[in-house]
Length: 307
View (cartoon, one colour):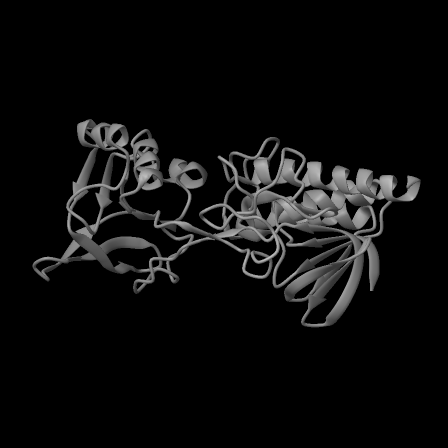
């Protein structure tokens, strides 16, 4: 297979990039290892994507994005991305199906929330277990939720959740927060927020939906059950850069470094969405990145032709 634009990842960034590239009359293929939609496809309701109808689900929104791509001629392939090699003006992309050639490559592999790894976590994902307060806080109005973690992200999200929940309990395995002092002070002074120190979540329990968490005190070994309506996990994210981190520039956390136009350190290779170093990881920002990457791919190829 030889194309103009090859996009790795079928989330909002990849789908948006595909839409713009194909509308620019480029032969475009999106390669995804599994279902389309990325993290948004695991979200039951989408309330913060501009223009989304009140009843739209994440899978429905992802499907509509895919349909738009198909309307403009994007080809979809289900393959596992293994890596790439730049050969002159051609990029050789290796997947589990072989080697493909493309003029431009857009990495939109996203980032996955780091799982806590406790019992019941996977079974209750989307049913009370969440990894995004911005996405799901509204579903927990006037309810008691737990936040797992003690870093800046965990405390920022916990403070955000206090605008919705009746009570927010931060569960932290140490006896002091890792968050910056200003955030820690805000957390400690918030009347709707309390902190359970020196504790880890052993199990998320419930009958279909989350009803409680079982906690273990790391100093005493004591096990206790705490009733909650939801659990937000903030123990970090893992950018999906394993196949390219030895070629493309990454930051200290492993995210791909680009300029404002999604260019990486290799000509013709772009990155977009949650895999990229940025301040906000949401479907809307991923789609914006993808649009820029798609347009930049068009311009890159136009310059190749003119040269």
